[in-house]
Amino acid sequence: MTRFYRSLSLATALSLAIAGFTGFAPSTAHAYDPASTSAINAAEDAVILHGYDAVAYFTAGKPTMGDAKFTATHGGATYRFASEANLKAFKAKPEMYVPQFGGFCAMGAALGKKLDVDPTQFKVVDGKLYLNLNADVFKKWSQDVAGNIVAANKNWPSIKDKTPASL
Image (tube, rainbow, N blue to C red):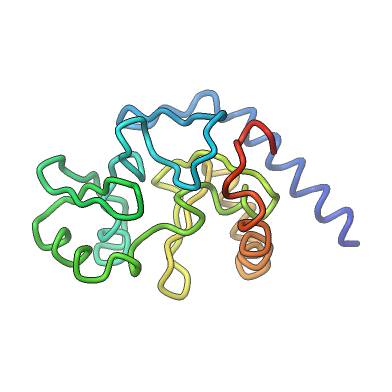
């Protein structure tokens, strides 16, 4: 398949997934703002990852809801943790746990977009946390993880300070 058609099919898959996104309801209130220029995908109260524990993705291997009594602020975002131990781990090495692309969708970044995420659609690759918009997008992203990471890393510097609506 030529690169053009592969890119076209990725864009088509992402468009279809976005169309299905309207039914996604995160378990915590989250205000994805398509007019924001922030490089961090956080709610109005600055909570990132829809309130999920960033450390648990690495230690438990699964998304775990954080608790407001265990919080830390890093890089303009407020992180919540399920335990005091996870909070301490984060404070010791925050850069080890922050999500890639400011917590925006990894596939979206690969395609030059800033999209919200479903925190249950994730993958830790080479010690880094990547999130995706929904299960369909995650499935498509998973077909070429390495290539999508390369594309997202290339696109991120030019899109991170733009509004999602402008992309």
